[in-house]
Amino acid sequence: MREVFQSERGKAPEIVAAFMTLTKVFAEAGYTNLRIYVDYAGPMDTVVCQWEFDSLDQYFTMERGFYVNPDENAQSLIDTLNGNAASGYKEIYEVIQ
Image 1 (cartoon, helix red, strand yellow):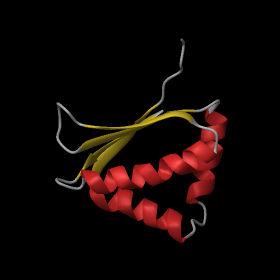
Image 2 (tube, rainbow, N blue to C red; image 1 turned 90 degrees about the vertical axis):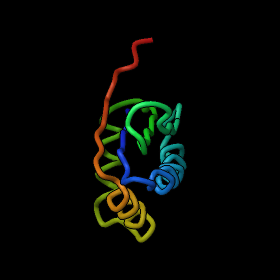
Image 3 (cartoon, helix red, strand yellow; image 1 turned 90 degrees about the horizontal axis):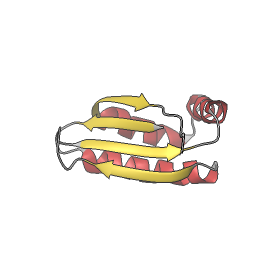
C-alpha cells in the first residue's frame, strides 16, 4: 500500500510528521516495511507513505475503525493530513516476490 500526498506548498513537513505518527500505529497493527519518502524529482512537496500488511481485510478493518468516532489524537492526525494536503491517492499492490 502506498498513500501519496501532494501537500500544499511548504507543508510537506507537517504531512511527514503525521505519517511518522501513523507508522507507529501501523507497526503496532503488525504492518511491515514501513517507509516514508519525500520528493527528489517530480512534483514538489510530494510525500509517500508505504507499508505492507497481510490482507486487505486487515487494512480495511483498521482503517474503518480509525475513522469511526476518532479520539482526539486520531482526529488531530486526520485534520493535519486534510488541512495540509492539496490532493492524495492510494496505490495498492500485491507483492509477488
